[in-house]
Length: 284
Image 1 (cartoon, rainbow, N blue to C red):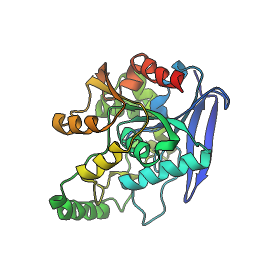
Image 2 (image 1 turned 90 degrees about the vertical axis):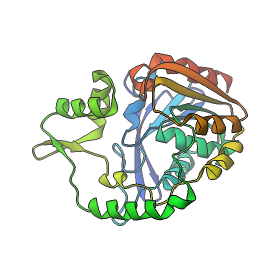
Image 3 (image 1 turned 60 degrees about the horizontal axis):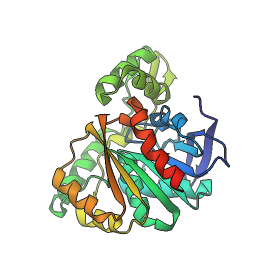
Image 4 (image 1 turned 180 degrees about the horizontal axis):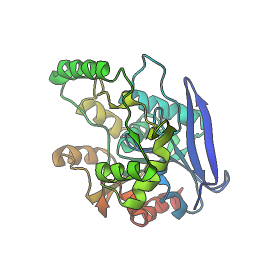
């Protein structure tokens, strides 16, 4: 099913695009946050399966059809959290269900702890909190980030002759089905001389200058009050088991749901994810 409408909303410094399924008064609002280098199209097959809710899937800054950051700016995880909160404010979402995939799940995890009164529930697909570093690695991380920043000064985005060529590249890189790759590629590309190029800001590939430590992440997870469903794909991202166990133990109302599939299970096999999210919607 096609989106009910297209979204365009202003936050400080950015125009945020997105796609909306469901009417404004359909029921609870679900704010969907995609993964790194993905877009709102990541939820195009899941959203139509949900009932009695309004699904707002956004393109985070630098992704999809949203604007890129100004010259001299950069993309760090903590900034993505602040951008997502600004989107909530711009949409007037005083209480919402968060749906996040991968990076978007990490963002949603921190928001749920940062603003517990505004998050009624969270459905996290393949992620609980962001990637972290030990403090002693800070100098090495910053040095590498600055090195990569210089490398990405020039726009070297690849140009594909056709949309099928771009989709084939995503199918291999993301380990998604051909149908899913076609959905992602349609929103991930823009026309240029010679064919199509990626829309995503190349600076998204610059490593973060600083990462949270596990202690930082634990503080956010401990503050979550909402019920959380953590969906883990059987062939998904290889998270460190000890780290994940420690994180899971900190969230008071967390249930792990294991489903068959790969990292993009919500797109490849949305029928496995929809019932989990629907239960949260029905409980609101």
